Length: 196
Image (cartoon, one colour):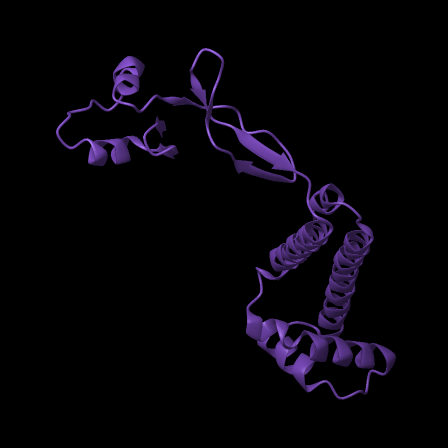
């Protein structure tokens, strides 16, 4: 960036070229050349940290070298509240994505059509386990198609259902715990630190 001394503004090299169409400038013109044309180079300053950081007007130092400046201020009460709410919303998105990814890893090996039968499989398996004369049309069809003993299939269905409930319950509990932490967060840093 360069300081346009005639117009008291910061401009790019492209803007200088447009302002001086009859002068050929290299891609990185010497500072002395630019200063002699009324466009001294603005030397970059590291961006400071703070709630609200905006680039200020460039300014010369005591030796006449121009430097980038920054303006830093704290959030207003309204901005702080909005930033905290946004950080909490972002944390909620992160934990929900974490839960979804964890559950998807388990479900990835099963087609959707099969998972839609799980509740029915479990209810029939538990009914059969309690009473061997219970009607189990879905389990009967699965056992026949697999050429598997019905009692063995029932045992497997119940084991898988119990494993799913345990995994799902643990993940749901974790998400709810993190959700409580998000609700309790009083600073942006606290909310940003909450991850799956």
